[in-house]
Length: 453
Ligand code: ASP
Image (cartoon, rainbow, N blue to C red; front, side):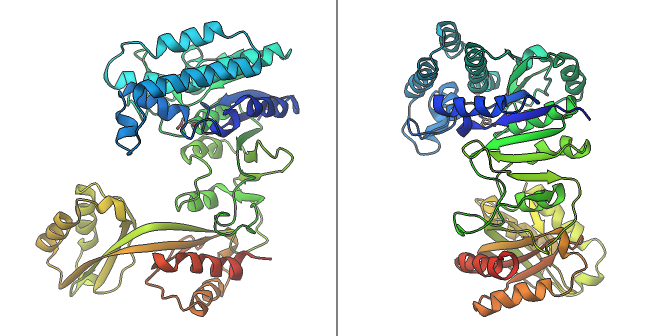
């Protein structure tokens, strides 16, 4: 493993000149910070929309915002994006006419269809990197822009959700030998046919993870606008603390249940190479943040409690399920045919529930019910809506008696009924399904009994 650090700065970290200066100070503070992956400017006081959303709006002639019930035309988005970058150039006091000209020309180009959307969407990161590199140079730093198209950041041609191709690692290893500070735009890559394609939303995290893998980084720092990963959602429980260290497995369990700090796909590469990920706050750079590592020695049982709202479950009762070979397969195949992702399947001898996201049932619930009725002939079936899953997570829970007892008694004290309970087989998480109306109270109760102090 090398000693270099890859740092990725999210949209809020590069939203305006003041933030970009904070980023510069962070990079300067450690000369191992050689690879700087940047997002497009995010929301700030001057605009409540991200540049990337404006770019989607321009590419789709206003449909992007219209479909979200927002009255922002493509022309307005264009003016805001160009205005944003002009302001950056002025506020950072750099020579930037060529950059603005490039942006204007890109945003009036006539590329068609999906290629158009991806090309436009990528421009946020592209020009963010160019401006930041120019600013660093003006400040006397030895910086260079490394564009994905120039360094062989190869992706599949699944436009809008492109996947990184394996050759990318070798290409990056070769191209990133430069000793200067490399500023790399996140979120997009180039297909084998030479088209620009974007990764899924939030994909700059992924770019950073791939760069870290390719250069054998000592650490992948992910700079955002929170002090790290919190034990529970701090908007609901402001006294919650930042978790200093957690394993990939734990963050995976927490992030699959509504902890949206980090793009999970980005972790896979780092996990495979044992590269720690450090989630840090650009606005509070002295805070150590959260370290995500492969293994750790737990001092506690639960490390966090995730919460996922908008949960529904399909309950099926039928005599002899337990003796019917292949029943669960047939049941889940029906969900697959409907394109509905399933989370858990608590079951008993003659009944089973399938837990899903409520929104995935939208427009499908009646057809799904009919198909289940016809194909499985249950004695009884119902869909229950408006549940939340509360999920304590922690490797210290494994083999520790009484953890679930304490958690359920905390809910009992609040008079909250547990509709569903399911323990993950690794014993490092379990899931309580309760009515959504009780979820705030339930989360607070679990926090007090399992995490506080
Ligand atoms: N700018 C892109 C987005 O808003 C990617 C990123 O910020 O990671 O999704």
